[in-house]
Amino acid sequence: MADVTCCNAGDWVEVEAVLLEPAERASGLPPETAEKPLVMWVKGFARRAAALGGELEVETMTGRIVAGRLSAVNPGYTHTFGEPAPELVHVGRDLRARLAGCRAAESCVAQDAASAPTSDEASGGEAWW
Amino acid sequence: MVVTRVEKIMARRGEIMKRALGMDYAEFERSPIAFDYEGMMSAHGYSLADITRIQTSAGVGSTPLLELRNLTDLVRSYAEPGMGARLFVKDEAANMAGSFKDRRASVSIHVARKKGYAGVIAATSGNYGAAVASQAARASLACIICQEAFDSSHIGQPEIIEKSRICEAFGAEVIQMTVGPELFSYMLELLDQTGYFAASLYSSFGVSGIETLGAEIAREMTELTGAPPTHVVITHAGGGNTTGTARGLKRAGATETEIVSASVDLSGLHMASDTDFNRKSFTTGHTGFGVPFATWPDRADVPRNAARSLRYMDRYLTVTQGEVFYVTEAMSKLEGLERGPSGNTAMAAALSLARDLPRDATVVVQETEYTGAGKHHWAQLNFARAMGVEVRAGDPAENVPGKAIVIPERPEQIRAKDFDLARLRRSYIRNALSHAPGSYAPTAEDVAFLAEDTNSDAETVERVIAELKEA
Image (cartoon, rainbow over all chains, first blue to last red; front, side, top):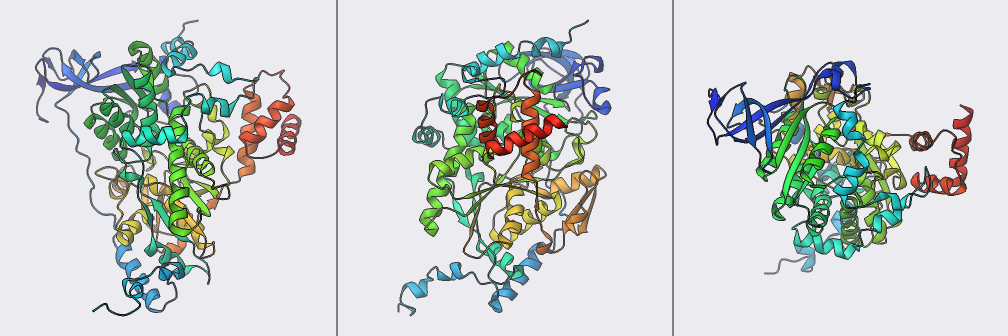
């Protein structure tokens, strides 16, 4: 619904509202924050038809009535996993090879792990059949 | 002088929070510095067994404790002969909403329902929002989550956007906001407007809920290895995780276990900066929360914070973002555990710690968190690059928070750094003194309180007070 530019009453929408203008913001903020308004977005059911950017009220999931400008109609999520990081793709291969190598050389075998009985040891070291 | 909207609501903070928490903190105050911490913690009247019952009926806790044999052997492949502790993890991602935060939320929601509140509100961009939303849904309570989600260009970190999504999936009303501490004053307005319960991360309800995690670890490690763990590594931000876990371990008799807190080093980045906001890949478990909350816990949204990490911390380790991403990938490939990066902060520190411990030492990483689109190391590295942060392979010692994420090339490059606890203690004492009236002289009771609150002794506290006076 990315191309939708207006909503009808009852549609699930998102509104945007300025909570604090820069002059109203808390003291002690870094300048890059202090010079910007504090803005909020919330989703709810439109109480009337409106165009994107137009004023309207929504009824949120808790039943609150919140006024703002229409910022999205039927808003969804598009975050992803994305591409693998080239710096990480080799990690699994390299570490598995390394483990196999040190286990073959018995340089890293966990004494404690090795002391846990294997199924062979548990049955006296011989195959049960 | 014009009174701003923020000042107006902040002036009513005490009154609003008293109603929203259903608890009067004034009765625990002893002086301008000291308060009755244990009295506050036990005021809810729930024993550890009561909390376990509350959590069991809420579907929370009793998560798997897993031995990480492959990571253990990996560490032993480069540790000195005879070194390389056994590694374990408590898979807290198995909780209903995907993290240990369910333990916190379950107790708060239980209290809210019992006291007759119609809904709950929490201010959090982290896993706690999902936990509160999930528990509120089960308890048929309305839920509002306030999140610091976007910079002023409406760009949000994928990890936080995923948290918005999951909270809405559980039926919460999510207020997404731009950067700034006024999130708290807006939460007060909402509490005032709705009459809902403040499901604070820092109330005694929430922090008591984590004690079951420590107790489970003590019991399960004893069953598995014959003794409680020698070390527990805890991802540290606001302090609740360290406090609750350590209290639970002690309650279960694990008094010798070393408590190691761990955070991602984000030094140099300003937590209220609109431009720094998206230059960090970790939204929690970092020094930007870990240090300020350790050195002044009462900066929280409750009058007295139940999370007082300095009381319990034996060591505080920092690791880099690149080290945590590397360990997240390694854990997935070697242990079949694909989990969220923030929760693996302690895992990165544990790998470094285990290397320097003998083979019979046992190191438990006490949590994992869920992963998924956005809340995943690939997504976060892609986002960091898009925000202009350099990502490269190399020596993680070259990491610069907000500028360069350096992914280790080999596991032996993972080296956690010890944060100086004496410096944290001193800073805490300075903060405690500065919050008392200027003319106030600390009494013997105050000194004893500060000694307890910093896990030190009266002599150390008195010396620091004297040094601060001279300075």
